[in-house]
Structures are given as C-alpha cells and as structure tokens.
Image (cartoon, rainbow, N blue to C red; front, side, top):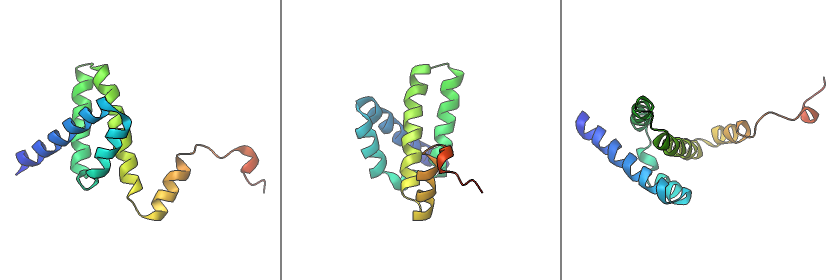
Length: 104
C-alpha cells in the first residue's frame, strides 16, 4: 500500500513537472484538476524530491520544482475556508504601508 501511494505521488509530480515545462497556465490547470491529491503525503514527496535535487546540485530541476511548490501551495490555499483565504491574500501583499498604520 505504501509503495502504491508513493508511486501515485511520483506519477503526479512527473505530470506537474511536464506541465511546468509547457507553461504556467498548464501547470495551474493540472493542479486545479488534481487538487484533491494535494495532501500532506504529496507535499512530503515534494520535500523528498527537493532534497534529492539539492543533493545532486541540480539547479535547473530545483527552479522547476520551486514553481511547482509555489503553485501547489496557492492551489491549496485557494481551496481553504474563506477566512483563511482572506488572511492569505492579505499576508501575500507584503507589509502594510506606514501611512496606513494607526498612529495611536
């Protein structure tokens, strides 16, 4: 069962890497289609793959993996509860400008 699960994650990651090579739009589309598979186990597999590529010093693959990780995180955040998505959208905007902060 464990081997089968790992094989599914490996297959999904291969598909995502292929999609990333085509375009960001294709990657995002594939992530959206497979959102239910973006579970903690998938992210553990991503971490393992990143570790392998770091050890191999494969900068080209690390760059592609970075795009996959970023887009996968955005996809997961977009599917969360509205209040979490709202917080995420604000957090991703960067620091609040000084003029907008309260002066109390």
